[in-house]
Image (cartoon, rainbow, N blue to C red; front, side):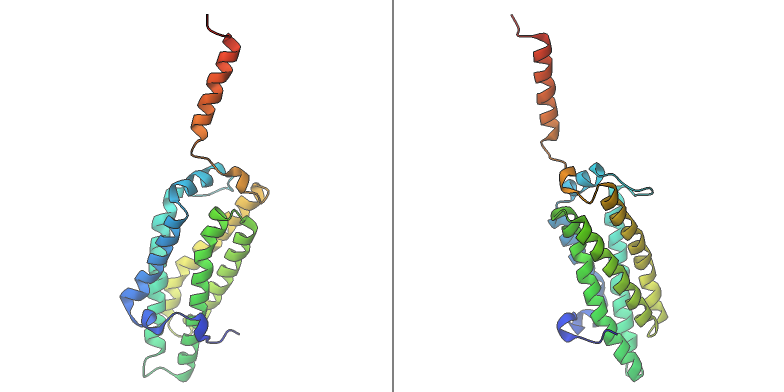
Length: 208
């Protein structure tokens, strides 16, 4: 059973402030998304063999913005209800335990994209997202004992993580757990054009 670990937990000021609690994961998720170059990420994503029901890459940005916002609201709600003066000692302990779990899952969430798209490590990325789903499921259970609204706010996120785990494992399996060789170079169209021209010159022979 995970306990409250201050060194692994975000500052209380983030949980206690609704705007900070909601905007903090959105800001971090957006920063990580731009750090791994979204245009190149979309090209690589489209070049990989995909399992059935994979969404277009344009869906992920808006979906994650909403999910990060719900995640932050859940954190604020659980913290404000669980640490209220009228709350029981058990609620206090569960709230703080959940705060540690929340911080851990956010870290696991933010490293998935660099692992998969930047480091090209689909095995490690899939292990990460499986752990993330497990931690988030446990977090939902813990905060659900404090406040049902907080748990329901995490439900869409938990469902999406289940689907994302399927996508991560499916892409890894279908591409033999090697995504580095599937990377799309921005110079690829120029190379194709150059090779096509050379091929035509060889077929037609030198001009007289």
